[in-house]
Image (cartoon, rainbow, N blue to C red; front, top):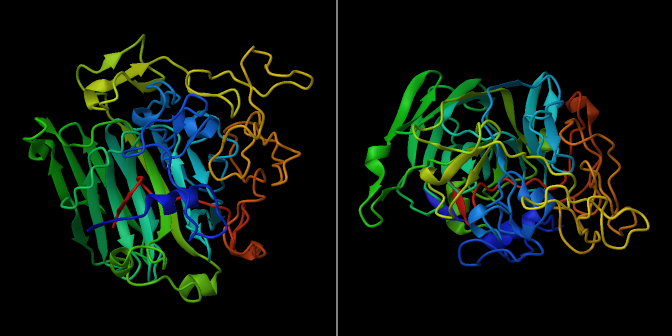
Length: 455
């Protein structure tokens, strides 16, 4: 079952509005067109900007040019356990160096008892972490315990920059069902869902969910037992004379989001089990709802036979056509790391102007001031920091103080002023070790696709 989530509400969440009822219109994507040259990158959520907007999730099809987005880091084998957050970088620090972080977070994930908590505090829209490297076919598994409660939705998905998508999702009022789904380029075809019934309790019991994604099939398995198979041959579209099959490099995303917000469509709220109750369950007992992840594994398969290459093709993926099909993916040796949050795919070495310089950085690149363009989704006033640090220290919205370099992971103090959702209550260190647990966490976007939420 699929419902549409208001894209304007999604945009409001992305920009970190104090109230999730406030709406801000997207400015790129289907029905909105492409981004302008001064903010060329169309982020995953339909907002144009530079810097972080050009990194993971950047939509090449609706950016100013096909190469406005940075090249996507190529698939690497990953076995993530979570004794700490050293391999989880905050979005305010990550500049595209996947060798320094396996995951990038929107929000403030926590560690408890050696496991990763994806949290959703009252008044927020949850948390999402995404893999820094992309997968172009592979076997991906996650061992986890879902959240629970009316209106609470847990998710483990694959999502490409072209909006190909493969999903597991769990509704908090049904703890014995894993919902599965898939999409081709974000087309809202609502007939692809399928449920897998389980004996285990998804909240109380550890369960391993697996996606085995091949060029000709997708297999959803639970604790080693096959629950569903999709064959590419069954996705032929006679109208377009092509296969509506997810086939482009994707990031792994782990998230928790509030399907039961009162501002959501009635059908979405009903499907999610009713309006979310922030004074019940874990939200009352702990201070937030949460999903617990013990381990996430990513195994890479070889690229498709005949895949295009530039050079050795060992570093990154790019597209050679806005059609965004498997045949348009190119493996390249292009770098993936921005010099600062003023960079884009076409100017990756852009830096803020040095003190005393009017309009140019040391590289000769034009550098707008911090008020000219948004560089990090969710930061009021953005900022032009280097190595992920906020550069607008005189901004009225506050500035970040983090000193870690790009991709260094760990907790972030940068950019937490001026865009938190809900009430900023005090943290409770007794609930987690190694990371502050947020009661009124800063914004974390959990929507998988612009306009489409898989329910």
